[in-house]
Length: 279
Image (cartoon, one colour):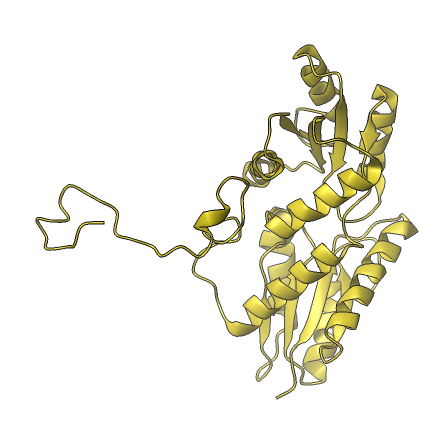
């Protein structure tokens, strides 16, 4: 059977460098899996639209899996993309919908690689700077990613979350907080996939504060691998749980021995009463 088309859906930007980054990402994906047709679509600013791309797939009788090139699930992932899928769907054509990219250990590795390339030492305190959203859950996912990045780096330098718009703290506020806490070495990790207006605001704030800032993440092998993982997952069917950052799956520093460990019954007081074996 022909593999479903992989439709990668990005937000879109008036900055042409954003489309360049997305095309570079898709080039990495095509090199890895030449048997899969890969198309790029956008939610705004840049053509083609996700609806048009999916209509073309439907008219050709091609199944597709939509992979949102989004780091957190906010209104675009929860409303705009599903609406486009619903409007473009045709009888006899299957459209799958993958999860957003973050959080995931591959993203943490990409951030770490960007920090190393920028010359940021492990001892530096970090500001993980994201777009910001009106969706509290999406903002909480950024805070969660900051915590996971702290765990991934092994501490002790803190990792604070900050936002370019829509909510607080801002990047300057987060940098100032870390300095007031006594951290002389501070850097900004750009939690964006591609250049654009908001990543530009983050970079400008970092430069004004005199701290290093990393490049966006799209054009990396880690993100390419993650897109393909999300694609394969959605092509196979629905996933009951998010296990991406599970300690039994991801090799967190100090917990590497737990990867792949067998799961045992929790020693609840009623287990023996109900005839369950002890843990």
